[in-house]
Image (tube, rainbow, N blue to C red; front, top):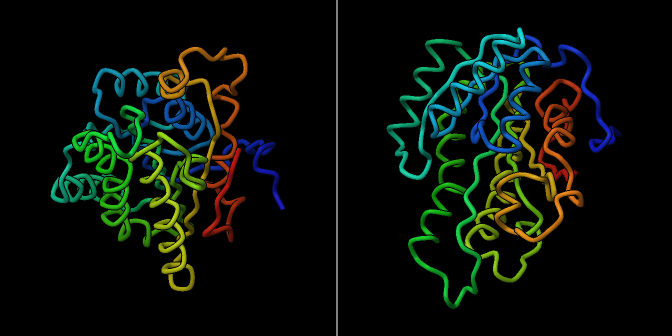
Length: 248
């Protein structure tokens, strides 16, 4: 069995694959996007900041990797119609999807359930749970056109075991884990799609700095150090792995 923590992707392991990545300009999302491109994939970068998307697009192009595509979208306000437009665009341009990686996340304020703000709750559920559901549902026809497709949900430890003050973020992650297992079970025997989740742990990114501003970042892994596990799940080396919760 592959040790996902030590996995080193072979050159061109993702050659000719079309992979959609949400939260593509985030700390982990950007590193995974660049590594996927370096491994031969055509990456479709989805995030809300056009300047950041353009910067990442330029980095990939200047490195000589396959030309990326960008899709500006704010998951906090996206509707089912918006996702249909996104999928129509991808279908016209590429005809299929070989990978879907959910990296977008919203933390909000950490507080006790008793004091949890409803607006923060709704926003967190929208970005962390409803958006991945709507996008995955919309992507299914394109994923079914692939000979070997992979859906990967990025999660966190508090979604596997509840901890105080993680509120909507922790609850949404718990629901994502269950949705991953349900979807994996639904598609295992009648499609070429595999579905898994991955918890990268505490990584030195703006997300975790916001959570623990006083912690020495030297105690955390760097984003570039955890990308191998994501590439493993998106590539052919993980064929047959589905419905599993991976941790880095």
